[in-house]
Amino acid sequence: MFSEDVIRCHTWPHAVEFPYPLLAMTFLMTWGIGLVGCPMSNTMLAMQGRYQAPFRELLRNNRIFSFKMTVLSAVMLNIYARMAV
Image (cartoon, rainbow, N blue to C red; front, top):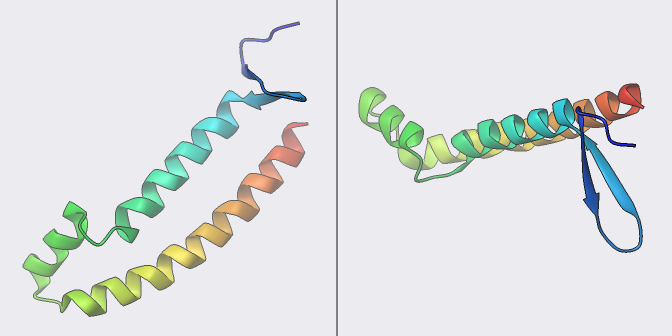
């Protein structure tokens, strides 16, 4: 039985199903967190150039933000996965 809103991944020993919305949310959350978490992203370089902020301060603040958002995203994905079942 194959549904249009589910991706099947056949791995040993079990087949795993990923709902499309959950997979899309995961990709968007990781992209958004990685955008501010990467020290060489264009966002960091643009903020440093525009606001003359010290690079170390931006990096430190973004690491704290990235950690908080990673924890929040993991919690939200778990809640959504439990509701989708």
